[in-house]
Length: 199
Length: 199
Image (cartoon, rainbow over all chains, first blue to last red):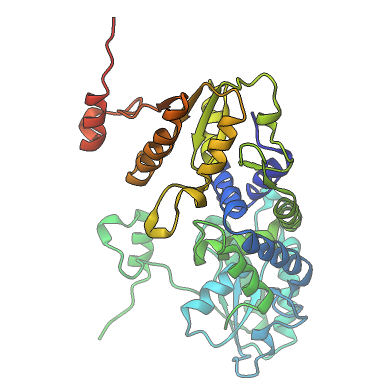
């Protein structure tokens, strides 16, 4: 036998969630049907509302349900410091780490000519415009330390330097709590090259 | 900062899914918002439809969107063989294993006086009634091999035996592909006690 159509449909829909395979989807469907119908109805509502209500901040381009997101709208944030990231998830990660008091600009990914992602596609012209129109004194490039992320950072730096903007790149090295023995060679080489004086 | 209210609400709702913690819920919310809004809308619809449309089969009590489920409605299933299980998930598991051609009866869990689950609560009177009203010749007890599952099986057997119904229990022993070295003692003792002659 197979599941009845509505259950089959629910299992298939749950598989659309990232990291959810057939077994997990089946377990979720059963759990919701047998124990948590209210939770499921609540989730259905939250999904529909969020998909229709959440857009992008017109200033920093992170996910936001208002035209200007809470960070851009906060007058206490330092308008002279702009952190450039690849995705809204990165904004959340930096915010959750705490300590950064500047503002953000979110690119739509990273330069990747092979995937058709050029400067236009990822929003670099909009970034340059945003920098020109504001009081930004320093741009911190926090794209991923991958080949594409580095290329993106270098491209942006090359565009901003001539405009007299200070440009920096976040530090890459051994993560806190990491053991040298288990760190990959690339990271270790980066950490050595980027050494800073102490005392 | 924190997430905007709609995103926060979506993340909280996703945590209602079994096995989904805060990090996973955040990842799912972001994935849906950034990449798969149609998938999310589809999931919202499937959840709402399934929660309202799926009930229980009035005959075997498994999850079903019709009054009589597809298995109970199938005339090719052997009506003399009834397999008693603890949950709809167990029906799915047996069906997916294949080979069983009889019908099912799904209890609402297992006897557990400490949780207030007596024979009434888990549906044993309904099971006895279903057996009496039908042509069932053999009842196969497939409750879990736990203390409560065994108690449930023994209780049902004690109610059916006087009525002249053949009652059997599924075999417990070393699982296929299992290595003796890694099997727990209880299972091993069970496997030895339940040995069957070969050749």
